[in-house]
Image 1 (cartoon, rainbow, N blue to C red):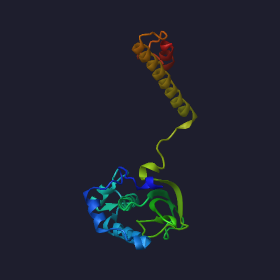
Image 2 (cartoon, helix red, strand yellow; image 1 turned 60 degrees about the horizontal axis):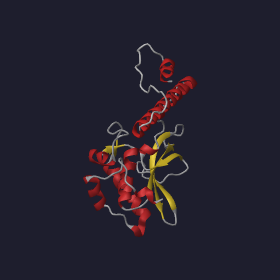
Image 3 (cartoon, helix red, strand yellow; image 1 turned 120 degrees about the vertical axis):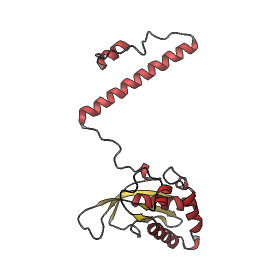
Image 4 (cartoon, rainbow, N blue to C red; image 1 turned 90 degrees about the vertical axis):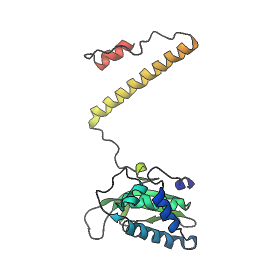
Length: 212
């Protein structure tokens, strides 16, 4: 639980966020109300505008720009809440806006752990707490933990081909380590040619054959 107060690269505060934090200390006596007020201030200060930031933009950079999207609003919120030593996490999911009854949109919001209540959601970009229009997909410390897609495999052949090359790399690495170990202890293990010269026309199968 308490690992969620740790800073990350995307949520680490700089000069601007640190100043904003000092001006907006949370009221522990009315924590939920204070968190909603913080959410409103972030939304008012950071105007929602696409194209001004991207997935690599930090909370500090978005705050300085004064523009961002739901991802940036959430990172800024997490940064401030963590400076108050409260566990909080990034949530990625789907959201159906009131004005659009047909399509779900990818969205981001935050959750804060409040004692005796559990995890409470805050959608900074919309200024509300998530309800039954929200569908959670993943949770983490920040956007990097919940990236929807990190790679695409194009069919069965490509998948197995990539696996084959990974296995080859592992085998070569193990053999290399054996030779290094043998060299260090003054003994010779096997008759391996670890890094044979590779002809431009030699196939991968020929290369593996030359090793053994």
